[in-house]
Image (tube, rainbow, N blue to C red; front, side, top):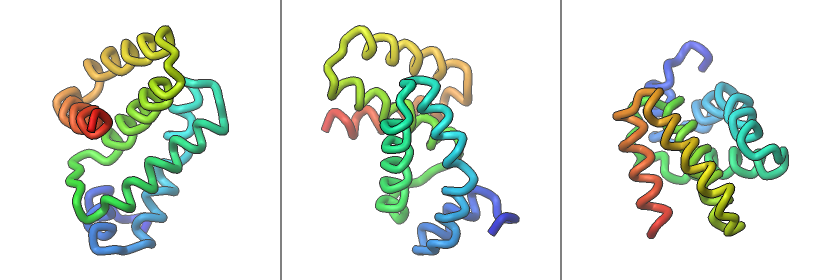
Length: 126
C-alpha cells in the first residue's frame, strides 16, 4: 500500500478496503496530532480530535469526495478545534482560533480548502 497515491487510497477506501484506510492513518496520524497539539496544547484532546477525524473519514468513505487528502485532513483538524472551543464557550480562544483558520486558509490551496471549510462549517451548523 505504501506505493499508492492518496487518490488511489481514497478510491480503495470507498470500496471498503481497510488496508488502504490503515495506510492513510499511518501517513497522516502523526502530522495531524502535531498540528492539533500546536494549536490547543492538550495531548489528550489532540488525540481525540485526530481519532474523530479518522472515524469520520471511515464512516463517510463512500460519500465524501476529496481532491486533496492532506488539505482535507488539515482542514478537519482546524474544524474539530473550532468545534471543541465552541463547546467550551470560551470566546477569546474561539476568536483566536477563527482568526488562525482564516489566516491559514489564505495561504494554502485556498480554493480547495475554502470549499472544504465551508462544507465542514455548514455541517457543524446543522
